[in-house]
Image (spheres, rainbow, N blue to C red):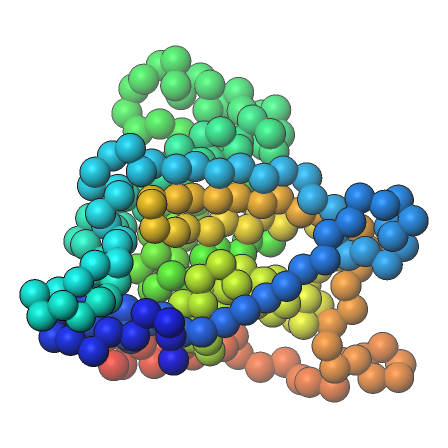
Length: 245
């Protein structure tokens, strides 16, 4: 099920048994211009934020032994707050690299005025697709709230969590594959992958589609075999609400 399966009775460590799963992904990177014709994406930016100098951040996700000596991964109650702060630091550095001038000016004006809540830039003006680390429902809810993303924006992340659980950084590639299979990725589209990890870390990668990615299941005439159906994301949310989760 997972490398970090915990066999003890400590509640803070048992939570990971419900979320963590095994997963893997591989990508092939090249800097040879001759490979452009068969490449799908161009890497624009990478950014790494590490907040491990703060003890609360360092201990919010940590592998440790319980009182009986059993090894497990402990999740603290500060996890969501720490993740939110790391995300804020990361996007503050990423924003100037990707946001249009109008959004940067609004943020700068808000920062100078220092009145009320600081302006949160509209990252949907910088990206067409969002691949958010599928660390858990609370993680996705927090990112959706902080960035003002829509259900459509979060669907690849929520469906990846629903189908595969928390597969760590590989979940970002499951999400991108989901968007590709749905026929969402068009030439010139920008993709933001944002991941979280113990430490605490928040990492971003920004890609641009070199070509339109054909969706899965296309017939000979280029029409998809599947028919339209209600959003699976909505079904999952309804099921979670009915279960009280």
